[in-house]
Structure formats: structure tokens, C-alpha cells
Image (cartoon, rainbow, N blue to C red; front, side):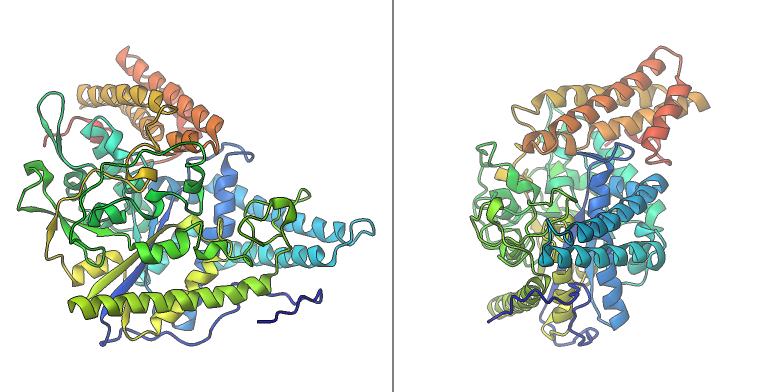
Length: 593
């Protein structure tokens, strides 16, 4: 198609350039179902400063992903589109997005983005630096940020979590939970820590969303079956602990279900933060699970691994595998949509403002030679790619139904921040895909728990230890550069377990210190710290945060062990953290299984 490359540009809005066809309600003729499963998570960064690492992570993601996603979902609702979506929000992210200080700083950040756009407009009008296209783009950003700021303040009343909650209450989305601080559960040494991570996460969810969660995104899709520990005792698989908290559905990587070599995110070469790993390491592959007839098109009950891999009795917990074919259309760094030459380039930013004025341009084009970004070209590609994806989903569902006669499910699982932040046009793409699929009589839009309730699993599956990290194993979180972190974590786990048992009936002062010790342990266990060290993205910040929470935990635990609970420091640490106000330290006592 011949596209005009004129400098006479109109203000083109990616999010408001929409197909106005109305979605219809449920189709009785549907032969299969589809759900996006979006996993939203960021490192803990409250009051960590702005740059280079800190609250700006949250502000960027809110500006580029969470608020645009709300805009898109509310627009769909207002248009009468009968969409469904599965959205995971980790407890530690929800706590930060609901924090008054974080939200106040987000407002300031948006004001700064608006002012930066204005300054760039003036800069590109000056005689020595005049550039009509960059001036246009600066003005385009100005209107974009003004609209985001208005909707944050007015449309969503500065309540991001409450706005997602309303969509769940109205039946448009299902919000799933996760471990409290995204702790990497298979590498924790104590069941009490797994129990504490999950129970704290569930309690935070109840407070935020006014109901119990039924679905969970295991951090990094990392699963661990039962095993015999060094004492000869059987340690339950993660499905046991999920069932204890009423969590019925979780998600896994493709190879965990089908067997064979890791694919998708676990195979590397993907868009987003996981794409940085192979450049620094040769990733060892996991022990390959033999290929088997299991499929990601249907859910399975997870075998009760407390009785061994050949157990006939299931755990009443369901696993849903990621559909690799649809996933790679977005994840793949080689041929996924985000690599299209007309989409905005993520890595190149203007020295004046940090705004991104360039497009991908070419697969191997050096940053110095990137061409200017054209929002109208990008919007045209969004239309094409949304239609292509919707057709792909329909074709896959029809093929599965023809071959098996079964009502299949396609679960397309992604990090939420991939859309808007890494792939700038991605949120608009999600909206258009949902519009197309809502009008497709062969496809039922659903959520994970809704599908499982309507189509309970008919088979039991034993799934292996695995993750969606590169190599399909635990390497990204436990390697030569991060192994030193795990011994202090394990020592703190044992110490907390002992203290929770020793102070089963605590005084008010002891309880306050015990609760803060539990919070610091959870923050210490965050999978973000070893991940950021491995990727090299924020190594110093990760080590600093890890060390801070280690020191704070030791201070709390030491004061209790000496019989002098340090309430003053517990109060000081609470003001710094301000997460999980209703935590119960008893959750960290040794559980009776």
C-alpha cells in the first residue's frame, strides 16, 4: 500500500481509532473458547526514588500499560462489546498501585511528561533545531499524556485498583492473584514460607477486590511437585498449598503440559525483559519431559503428588497450559508483531525529554539510523495484526474441534507490561482483538475460572518441576551470580518459622515486631532480586534492596530473640514498606500437613 509520507499530519489517536462494530453476547454455536491471560507484576519500589530504578518503574507501567488498558476495557464496555479477559495482578503490585504516595507521585510524573512534551514542541520550533515531524510527534505525545492524566484523575478517580475491581464485579474480567511478593516458590526451603506467601497474597486480594480469588499465576510459572526432603519426610507439591487456600486454577508453560523441549518464553529469543538473558548466559536446558498426548487446548486436574507421580486421586486443582502458537505471535522477537518496522522503537529515546520518536525501521537497523515514528502507519498495522490474530484463533479452534470433536480452550499468556510499555501499540491491539473475537460465532470469550467451572477437567495430569524462565528450569533465579542469595533466605525462613512457633501467643509489642519481620521476609524472598541480577538490568538496585530487607529482618528477629522487641524500629520499617497491613505472622509457623 502506498502511504503518504507528508509532514502535514493529523492528530492520530491509536486508542480512539476503533472499529465501531458492536460485540454480541454468547453464541450458542461456539465450538471453542479463548482467553487472554495477562500477568501484571513489577518489583517493589515504593519510596525508592525516581531514577534510574525506583518508583519510575511503576509510573512508566501505569502510564504506558495499566491506565491505557483501563481506557481500552472501559471503552469496550461502553460500546457494548461482550468481552472477557483474565488479568493477574500480583499482591505486591496491587499494594503499590493502591498506595497514596505512589499515586501522588504518579500524578507528578504525568505532569512532568506533559511539560516535557511542551518543551520538545518549543525546542523543535527553534530555528537551529526546527524539525516539523518531531514537533508533530511532541504535540501528539502532549495530547496522549493529557488524556491519560485526565482519565487517571477524573474517569478513574485516581483509583487504578478500584477501576479494575469494578470491571470484575461487572463480569468483564477475572482478576487472579499470585504469591505475595512474587517469591520463587520452588526454591524456598520451608513449607511455612510457601504458606506465608500464598496466605498473605490471598488476604491482600480480599482487601483489594472484596472477594476470594479462585485463580493464581504462580510466580514465573514455577511449579514444584512433591519430593522427599533430607529428613526423609514428604514435602507436598505446590498444588497442595494452592488447594489449602481455595485456589483452583493456575497456569503453566507449554512444555510442562505437552512435554518436549521448552518453547516460547522458556526457549528465549523473546520480546521484553526475558530477551536480555541469553546475551549474558548460555542457558542449560531443563531435563526434557518426554512428549505426551496432553494438550494445552484443555485443562487438567493436577495429580496429588503427595502420593507420588502415579497417584490416581487428583488434587482438585486445575492447570491450564499456555498456547504456544498464539503466544509466539506476540512473544517472538524474530517474527512476533512487536517487531514490525512501523511500530515504535522501544530502545531509542530523545536526549531532550526521554520521549521515543522513532520506529523499529528494520530488523537489524542500528539505533543511530532509526527512522521517525508515524502513528498513523502504526495504527494501520494494529488493524492488520488484530485481524490476523483473531483469524488465527478462529482457525486453531476450528481445527482442534474438527480433529477431536472437543470444545477447546486457547489460553494466550503474557506479561501485561509487554503491552504498552515494550510494545507501545499493544494495548490498542488487545482492544481490537477482543472486538473481532466478540463478533466471531465460533469463539466464546471466557476467563480461566469460568471455563473450568463450565468444562471441568476430565483427566488427571502429573506435571514436572518447571518454569517459563529461559531453559524451562530455575536457572534464571539460581545461577553463579545469584546462588549466594539463597542461603541467607533459607536461614531467614527457618528463623521466622521458629519465632512464629515460639511466640504463638504474643504480646502486642511482640506481635507488631513479628508482623514486620514477616513482611521483611516476604520482601526478601521476591523473585525480582535474583532476576534483575541475572539480566543485569538493575543489578545494583536489586542487591541493595535484597540487603536492606535482610538487614531489617535480622533487626526484627534479633530483638525478639533477645527478649526486647524493637517496636520503634518496627514502626520505622512499616513507614518505609507499608504493605500487607493485615498480615498474620502465625502463617509462617511450621504447618501440620
